[in-house]
Image (cartoon, rainbow, N blue to C red; front, top):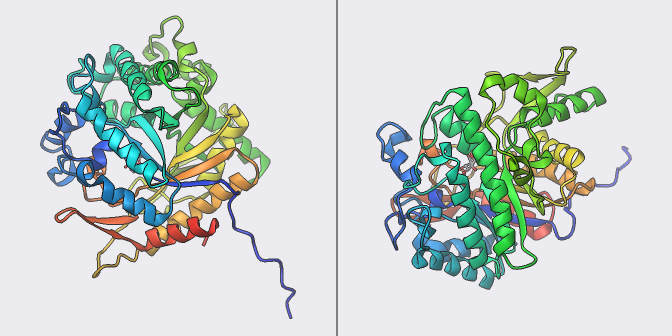
Length: 451
Ligand code: PNW
């Protein structure tokens, strides 16, 4: 007979935080209520041809009204934390000036209800919806200062109860996807110099917001960023390929997280952009590198990297038709990306703490009676969570994981055609139905191990 090895221990460190994530424009609806100003995303979604099926966030999951029900879903899952974002246009309808008390009151109610349910709130200040009244949007340097004023104000309002605050979500999405590729609001395709300037304003806004939050928040408030640096992953775990993936992580994210962590733009980036490099004022880089209490990462798609003899020392291996994908064409599956993002960031920049602010997947869900058997999403989540667990048990400072998303919602340019939720939302009736993945996540949380 075969000798029986000890069973694999798949448990998480004690105190590991499990949560779910959402964002304001994707779930709230109520876009004209209680004095909310118009946002860039209202304008974009109401421009014909920009969003699949002409969908908008006008109603979304109606969470502005149904948040008690959504908190009940979180409670049923047994999560310890919830990541939500604050809609800037609810707080400063015109971008700056006098705060709108009714908008602030909504987030007071939400936070109080979360705490009453025993759920720790983690707030993102900017998850892509900004007041449309701000002249020039991210092309205008002033927007970075306006964001900091808003973030500082909200930190002052909430930090007696909200102890984890993220400045911005995904630098690359609200800069490149929005101003280079034209796929997200405001839908621009700027030339390289324009794109680089927008990127600079993005990281500057983050740094200014860190300082404003620290100035106005209660002591003990943890400040971080939620970024989606490209998840470079070695094609195999041997020293040369591991080194290549780490090098790619630093260089290819030079205009984003590398600048935030190191306080300078790498020579490689500046040389590559030449005359199109961003215009930087004295003192900007020190602001951008304001010290953080934690770094949060959104992890989805791996970019495979191999060692190479060329001048760069690494080569990115392109995705091909046979690369496994979930229901969004960009969502290539590669659970090892989870482990390597945590390890690369930890080894290079030594953050005090790390969180995963998003991980999850779209799937072709069908509601049959009251069931959605999304076994493929469970497979995806199990694979990624196993690799995050690996990083945590090896001692990298990974403190928690937020699953994207609590429920199906407005998936930006894909509208309601792509579902990322672990709760199914019937957008006609607003009924929420827990999918198989919600049952799975609940067992993971209850047992504190991979199931
Ligand atoms: C993230 N891409 O966005 C966002 O933070 C969420 O708001 C979003 O719903 C979630 O991931 C799922 O998409 C991304 O095209 C959007 O590579 C697009 C891409 C990546 C992330």
